[in-house]
Image (cartoon, rainbow, N blue to C red; front, side):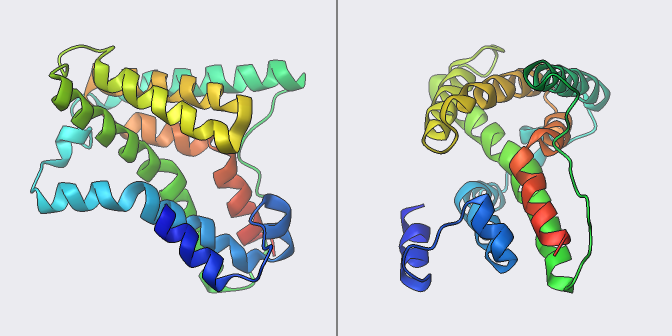
Length: 211
């Protein structure tokens, strides 16, 4: 993250913001958070798995437990949108792609990368942390394990810097998804669920596909 931040400070004009308003004003900037997410969140764990020749089934990418993983994850999604509807007084959804008009082919590719980076790859990152932290504490056999609790605690704390109090919601979601992974040993359901629930993902896609 420090390396990426240093590069961005060096190449971007002074006082350049990367909030939603700035990205809508200049959609070309939307590729920056996408690439940053891939490099800072998912790339290293994937490389570790490849170089260590680990089985991807270790991280829940397998058929075993798939149906149970999907069913439990669907319940988390329903609970999440029920929470949002109570907060807003109406049913809301994270997916909003109104006014789709793809002006450049690279934007479609960037949107696909955004979905991958802020959906499945982010969940893989968390699952990778849970599994390997469990190995450190020798707590893999327990559902509410040290690896799960430490990872979610740190993940929630880190999100407070960018999400404020909403970090509690993110921590609660990932705790539920982590429990599903630990229970079913399958992470496909949590990956799909977080892809649907991650509002920032769909904000990026909306920016990329509506300009």
